[in-house]
Image 1: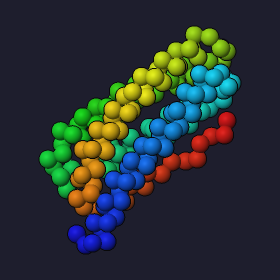
Image 2: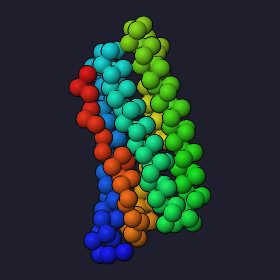
Image 3: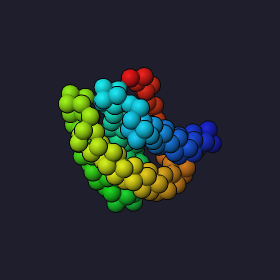
Image 4: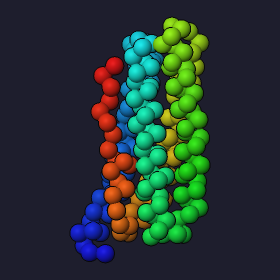
Length: 165
């Protein structure tokens, strides 16, 4: 691998951490808004949908692109990738519950659905943090070692702007 390609690969581990930081910030803003009751039920649903979409797109791009590229170059990462894909499934389940609860809160008004969102988001934050740290440690080394990017990075690192909802 050329020096320029190696530098690009090393930059991918930094971009992965930056993408995770952006997702953490987005979730923290939703949780803060929910806790302070400054989000209306409609804007809560909008913010939750935007966040759920961003996190889901990130994970789908990892599953379909980044992980395949890593496994081509590093088959020894198969157990790590399997664990990460399993985490993605757990996170998808939480995101589905959050989206359902946010929709209920938007149509039914404040109450149990809105309160339940806080619990789901707390659990999501804990799982995301563990998942992101593990992924950054386990895959960062492989990315820094020079795994080629054949275009898979676009969906992993780039998010649409947050909804102003």
